[in-house]
Image 1 (spheres, rainbow, N blue to C red):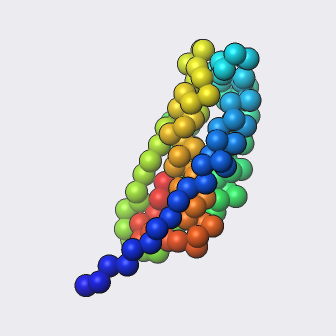
Image 2 (cartoon, one colour):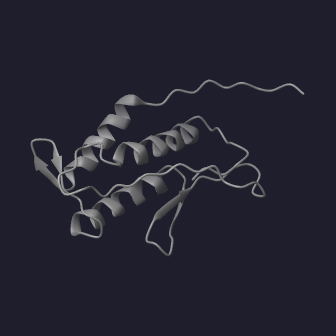
Length: 125
């Protein structure tokens, strides 16, 4: 069996811009971000990342624990999803990357898949 190899590269500038935009929600100055779980700032951030996930071709749902889960479909719906995850809320004096980098890295992968018309066999969450 011959395997096909595809080289893809994330858009680091866009990743940085998205992190900066997200850090403005609850930004306190001096690099501090305060976006406590279920606070008004967290709800605004949830709305923003939901828009970003949908724009990247993901379906978005909220589970029983209030986690946002975005799913980018794979080519074989019978296979289990590959998952990555993090959080977008922060500790009281978190920084720009407190959880957000992990979330945004996963989203940037999906953005790359969408722009490249690339599909994994597995869904990606």
